[in-house]
Image (cartoon, rainbow, N blue to C red):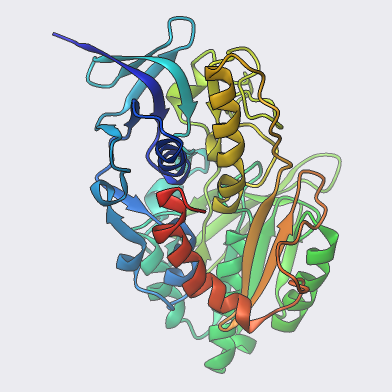
Length: 400
């Protein structure tokens, strides 16, 4: 028979946002917290770029979920089927229910591979890979490291995605490798980009334009991949720069694919959704409190706050959510505000990195006492060593 449990604070998702929030709440003295998370493994996904670039082993990015779950937090090892915010209840895939007084929604997003015709069958073979999956990131390196000529295509989908800079980070690492191997001149590197600029913040876009020129990369602005034929090694892209979309097919020898992304399907169907096709949780962008349900908060990739979906954003969102959640528990209005801060460490070569930090208004929001709008070796070290250390040892323990 299905059972129903009750927790003062229920967190949906044991990823970066969920674990960080739970750890911080424990440090604030909250002792009735549960996390719903079906996975056995927790991943540090930002390093997958370096895995795909042949710099780090993939095993370094994974740890058992049991090792990162905060002490004193109940782990409900199950998936969510739906949430009824009217009844303050989560229904699990097992059929059991969990009632809550306060809810934090942080399940991350889903990768919509099937939104690109042929992509589910193509990825992982015939020169097609993606750093957006743990098992595929090593294949990216397998495919690109031996390429000696032909066409290499890197794609980015329309709409918000995890780490919007990741589609071009691997492109620069690949081009740097091919340059070191003396074969870059024999490879046509193409970036299929739905937008009309390399980055949303002009200060950083100008630097990346120089990087693109240095490697001789062709950028197809206002284009998006819509279909792929893995057996034929052909990709169909749609040109949206004119009055009507125009499709064309190109051959490739290597292709790094980034799938479209959206909120989990079960979340789209709840009253917490913003009602758009992407289906993210409808929150106030400042307080991160739900616009209709005062006992519900959301952060991380699943909220519709118009910020970049990065771990750096979570690090700034979590204190806001916690302060405003605790205020709600005390019957007060929370006064903490999130300004949209996010950070995107963009690898431009082995040993070089541009650290882009910005806010909701796409204005630079630096945290360093020096100019990071340059390719820097010390920022490369931060990406490779400093940030992973901070993640595992500080952020997931509620200390940063």
